[in-house]
Image (tube, one colour):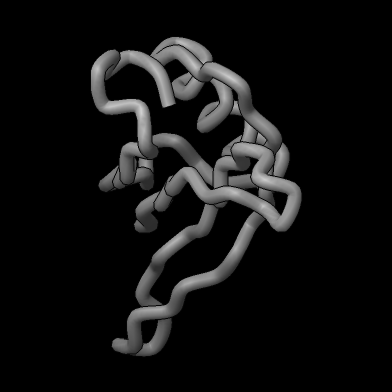
Length: 83
């Protein structure tokens, strides 16, 4: 079982990026690993969901074991369906 963590961040060039990490338990210890940064301009909820499925496929993760998805919204809070 695992959880995917997604957070918007700015790189040194003030370019919006999505930081993706995975959190899981191994030997009764919570582990967290960085997966990748993804450049984003506007990412809709549907695009985000498809991105998560593609990440699962790329890293060989099983969607049925995905028990959580944490989205930390970025600066644009006027429109909840965009990052």
